[in-house]
Image (cartoon, rainbow, N blue to C red; front, side, top):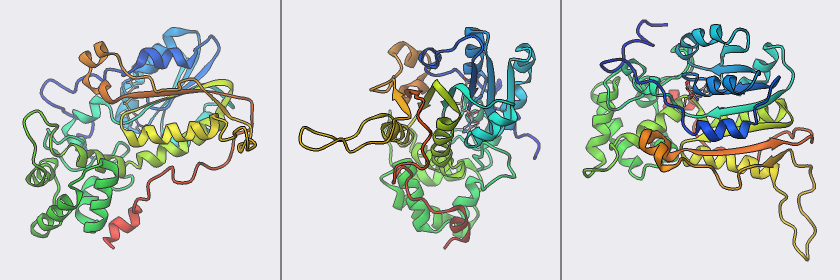
Length: 345
Ligand SMILES: C[S@@+](CC[C@H](N)C(=O)[O-])C[C@H]1O[C@@H](n2cnc3c(N)ncnc32)[C@H](O)[C@@H]1O
């Protein structure tokens, strides 16, 4: 691991992460004495702290970011045996739960995306506002591929597809063309260099979001396989939750929310059936949906924390039916593989 990864942030240090939708998330987890809860996105420990304060329960905290796990050591100590903190990806939920000597759990909560600490640390390369190496990996620097790898190796077509699908950026083709042209002159290795290239293509008016917002979001989601992680974690949560156990997911963009909504609709709603046709869905439902519509933040929370503006929370309660293998077809967008991208095919 290179020096400085968790290092200096913007002047004055990185802003502490303010938990989003913490109140409803904790409420819907239905926390009780003796319960075991998994906080799959420990971050700055905001949710975990609230869970531990609510009842005499235990928490298994997971984060793929070793800096977040290291910073959580104080909380582990304060929790006096009630918190186990593990550096891993939440897609490994089953194995993590087993490694904490548990079989089933009473709740799983995922608060997706990046933390303020990650965004505000220039060396992590997540931010177009701060100049840093174009990295964007939440996990160890030696794991997977970096944003710079993608930007410098992917074909123009793959770049355009990634930026369009994961950033919902209408000017993806123009951006991909500009990236390929610029990298023919020199490697693109910094957040500032990429932000400038994108800004040369995407015109913005005062009051608009930064022109590089959608491109940076797309790269971050791609590099960290965020949608793949979510799909695997939802299936794992179905396996590890006890009957009556709760799943709570807070997402920050439409692609994530669509995955959660579609998964829960598949597991938690009786499909079809009419006066004339028999019920189509005959398999036992594995979840009871608790949020017919997603919970969103109140204006007062958005005022305090603008990040809450795009947050959507969905929750469901596990039934006693057996977990199902597989997920609905088309749940994941068809993205190029890391190998294809690195080959620049
Ligand atoms: C929005 S923050 C969570 C903040 C937390 N709820 C709090 O109150 O402080 C998201 C965290 O999840 C972590 N994360 C994102 N994807 C992950 C994954 N697939 N596996 C494990 N951790 C992940 C990130 O490293 C980050 O620290």
